[in-house]
Amino acid sequence: MPKQRITKETVVNAAFEIARTSGMEQVMVKNIAQKIGCSVQPIYSYCKNMDGLRQDVTMQAIRFIQEYIKAHIDKDDLFRSTGKSYIQLAQEEPHLFKIFILHHREGIASLNDLYESEANPHTAEIIAGELRISVAQARQLHLNMLIYTIGIGTIFSVTTPGISADEIYIQQESAFQAFLKQAADKTPALHDIQD
Image 1 (cartoon, one colour):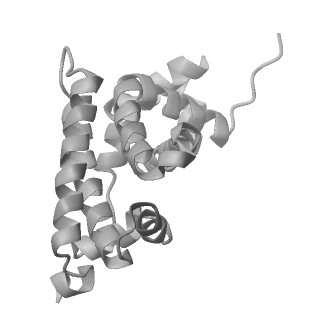
Image 2 (image 1 turned 180 degrees about the horizontal axis):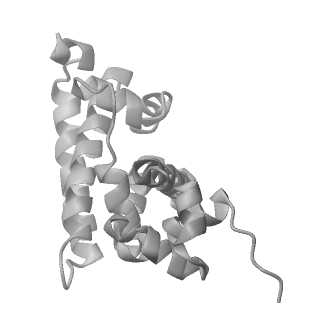
């Protein structure tokens, strides 16, 4: 049998699969070597810096999550289905969800910065059109739901034996209705909050 050629891609893919099934804390040279079926020597040649490898794994996890959400949203109910998709992700891929939530975000000094880094720039316009509210109201609603979904998704992904997804969806819908009412009643613009 020909000897397997170990590439950086092979190492990153193996590390990603370990992180996906067991968590980022299990991404270690010996575990990667065992997964690939080689000695640790080839792994060390690509992993002079484990932080760099973990960053590569994080970027692969983020790409996976973007594709997952895109594949699971309902285009006829974009806003609600996106939130539900994140909860479904937390249930099906808890380790990847934790990687996404816990990865370090540079240059964030306000909730507006967080919103700008996490949200598609056109999402507020889409939400405004769907819900017949202003873009400023839609941004505030989206920010509130982003924060809420990250929080409840985190709780969901770290509890055992686990909260039922139906209970989480009901809670998420309740939060949506409350935030929508608040947005419709009065919405300070995000740039006003940070000033």
